[in-house]
Amino acid sequence: MVQRQTLYADILLPLPLKASFTYRVPFALSGSIATGKRVVVPFGRNKVYSGLVKKIHKTPPEGFSARYIHSVLDDRPVVTPAQFAFWDWIASYYMCTQGEVMNAALPPAMKLAGETRVSLNPGVNIPEGVLGKNEKELVDALGEKPLMSISEASKSISVSNVFPVIKALMEKGLIVMKEDLDNPWKPKKSTYVSLSEDYSDEEKLREVFEYCEKKAPRQLELLMAFFRHSDEKDDIKAREVSAVKLTGSLKGGASALKTLVGKGVLKTSEREESYFSHLNAVDRKADLNPEQVEALKEIRHGFSKKDVVLLHGVTSSGKTELYIKLIRDTIRQGRQVLYLLPEIALTAQIISRLQSTFGSNAGIYHSRFNPLERSEVWNNLLMGGIASGSSNIKYDLVLGPRSAVFLPFRDLGLVIIDEEHEPSFKQQDPAPRYHARDAAIYLASMHGAKVVLGSATPSLEAYSRAKAGKFGYARIDKRHGGVQMPKVMVADLRKESRSKSMKSHFSPLLFESIGKALEQGEQVILFQNRRGFS
Image 1: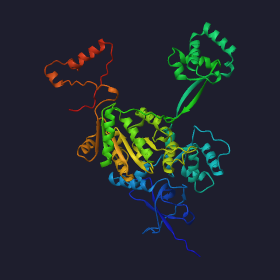
Image 2: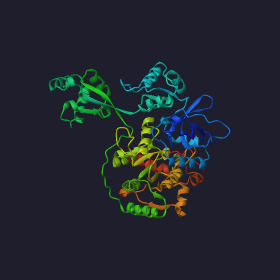
Image 3: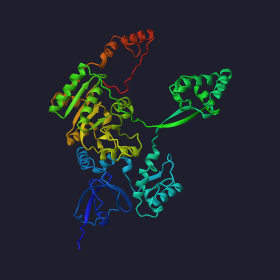
C-alpha cells in the first residue's frame, strides 16, 4: 500500500497582515490544488476567506497544528507566478503587506469572505432551468431575506460549503456583493423612437399628418423630423431615430413625442449600450509630418540603448499617432501592450480613437465597469482569449488607469504611460500607496518590455533622468497640422500695483484684452488659481 504524503500550502489572504498562512491540504484536494488558485480557508474563530495558494510544500508549521483547507474554488490558476513576484516587489518597495497588495490587485468578484454580504442582482431576470439544486435553494433564501452574509447563506442551504455555490451564481450574474449594490454599475441606456405597426399603413399615416397639420403643429414638426432623420431605411417599419437626436433641436419636442407615443403613433424602446462600445477596426494610415517622423526615429533609437524613453511633445503635436505606430509594431511581434491613462472618464476621445483603430482587440479595465466585466478582462488576458465568454477575442492592447498594472499579462512588450506627470497615477489611500508610473516601469523590466512616457509638461524626475541619459529622449516642438501655439503674455502684478495702475483685481493688459475681445463679439474665459503660491 502506497502511503500518501501530507501536503501543506501557504495561503495569501486579502488582509493587512505581514505573511501568508500555512494550511494543510486534505487528501481529497491534493489533485486539484495548484499555485495561483483560490481556496476557501478558515481564519480566526469563525471567519472564512477565499485566499490564493502561493506555495505548496511538505513542511509542517512549527509550534501549531495546521488547519485544513475547505475547498478549491478554481479549475485553473487565476494569478500567475509573475504577478506574485510583482506583488512582492510592490509590498517591499512601498512598505506595505502582501495582503494589501492582493486586495488592491484582484477584481472584486474574485474576493470572497465569510462576512461578505450578497444579494440578488436587481437588474437580472432568472430564466427557468439554469439553476442547480443548491443554487436554487440559495436564490430562494435570498428572495426571503434580500441581504445575507456568506456565513448566513451557508446556514440557509443544505451544503456545508457555500463558496462554490456563491461563485457559480456570481459568474452567472445572478447575485452581487453589497459593495456593488451600494455603488451600482449603470449601463448607458439610449431611447430610440420608431413607428408603431398600426401606423405603418400609408393611409392611416396620411390621416395623422392631416390632423397634425390642422390641430397640432408641434407634433407635425416632430413627425417630419422623424422621417427626415430616418429616410435611409426603405422599410418604413425598420426606421428608428435616437430620441435625443429627434427632440434636441425642436422646441417642445419632448412634449410632442410624449403625446404621439400616448396616441400610439410612435413607440419608444430602450437600448443598452456599453460605456465604451467595441468597434470594428478601421485601417487608417495617417501620414506623419516631418516632426513626428523624426520623433519616431528618436524613440526607436532610444529603445536600442534604453528601456524607457520620454516623449516630450507639446499639446496637439500628434503623440497619439506615434503611440499607434509603436503599438502596431509590438502587436505584429505577438506581444501585448499596456496603455496607462490618468483617468479613463476624462480621456474618452483617446479611448475611442484607439478602439476604432484596433477594434475589439483593445480591452478596457476600469472600476466604472461592473465586477463581471472586470473579471472577464482579467480572465481574457490570463487565458489568451479562451475564457472571454462566448467570443474568442484576444486583448493585445489594454487601456486602463493605474490599477491596470496588476492585470495578468503573459508577454508584455510595450507600456505607454500617457500624461506621465499626472498626480492621479499615485494612489494616496489605502495601501499600497504606489506610483503607477514607477510600478509600470518595473513591471516592464520583468517582461523585457519597452516604456514610453508621454507628456507636454514632463515631471521633474522623468525630465531629469532623460537629461542625465538614464532615459531616452524624443521631442516634438510643433503642433500637428500647422496649428499655431497660443500667444502667452505675462503681466507683472507687483510692478502694476506699485505704479497704482491696477483696475480692481485686473492688470491694465488683461482689462484692455477683455475689452477688445468683447468689442469684437468674442468670448472670454478667466481661470482663477485658487491654490496659488508665491
